[in-house]
Length: 555
Image 1 (cartoon, helix red, strand yellow):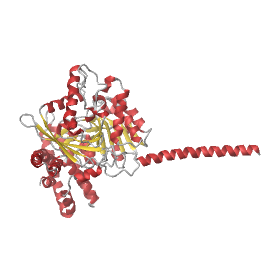
Image 2 (cartoon, helix red, strand yellow; image 1 turned 90 degrees about the horizontal axis):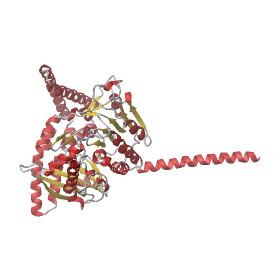
Image 3 (cartoon, one colour; image 1 turned 90 degrees about the vertical axis):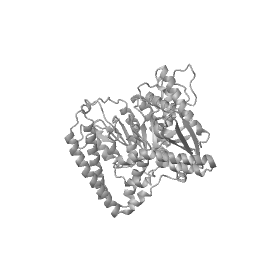
Image 4 (cartoon, one colour; image 1 turned 60 degrees about the horizontal axis):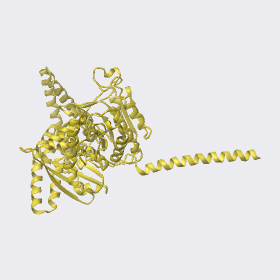
């Protein structure tokens, strides 16, 4: 019933409102199934619990992605899609204008009224168009209604033998601060459940981690070091340790929920530091034991089967020291030049730097399947994440304004095995119950990217270069994305001075979505064999030329 209601809602706002309120229903239904499981000890109730819980995770995102894919697969005319896209863009732009004006110190009520009237008419036109689609193409609406999250069997079929998917489902906070946490663990051959009862210290420790990672404290002072490292150990003790013995291997796929979304799992501590310890070097970070990746839901973490292509890398890196950025309080990113140059040691592609790093060039580039690397500033909107944006160069752009907003990203189509957002706070945003963070990373996931490399907080420019350059090196060797990022972080920890081993400097980057390599092992082998053949062929040519010259000399 909830799924049918959601499909009938026309706007994302109404679907998000439903998602926030339906979470309580899913929590209650999960709790009932849990009570029945405790009474009967029948494993079928664990399956029922998970089938209920996963419906309450990123349902709006899953529904919108399914709708985009169905639109193309059922043969709807391109003209209809263009008409709907234009309407959606105009509606979003009108909402942005209203939102901006309402938050001005002295809002223009006359303009707000005009925009609201225009918005009303456009919404009516959108509803009329949707009604025509349902009438003329009923298969589209019928298929959308039957869209379901991936089944347990489908999830297990996509897991490798050394992968374990850990899905967290967290209840709302009760009056006494207590929360129910259901941890579902899925491996290739089983589904397990662990229940943890959390008290108010969970929220307190989550806030400590979030504050320290924001750069406000970064755990530098002795008092902060103790509270920060305790919080990292507390999270390991409550989120990983209860299921650690059940894992299938060392590759963990994390599906977070609520405030768990803020947490960097590879920085959790397996053991508390010694009482007299004050430095971050040699701490028992979980990255030494496990490889982590993340997903909005268990239905959205596996490949979309677009691996057969040989992908180019398109890198965008504006120069924030030029005149077009004056007055915008954007610091120059000195490390991005080195970052983008390093990529092309291992991958082919095109780089757009300085005045070439425009929004128009990016919009053209995403029309082709490729890997996209964005090393730039973002402008976060703390009130509504839809209006957060990526900041491109606009000086030589006669078409776009240089601000690519999150809602514009979500309405684009990005066919890519990986988008790397080497951007501050690309994985942060407004947190919605049941839906997750409304971040720039989510925008690219909605647009169709199989995976997004995101940052969970504001990253340090210099240390970011150290991690990302080694990440691309390991990708070039055919490693999985999660393992490539892990190896890059481990190398960072072994090569940097002790003061820079604080998780603030290295743990921000995370893999969201599909883990598969961007360079297939067989292609890597082909490249190596081809290189060897070229060398051998060159050697043979030189050998026979010398032999011919020697023979001629003898004659």
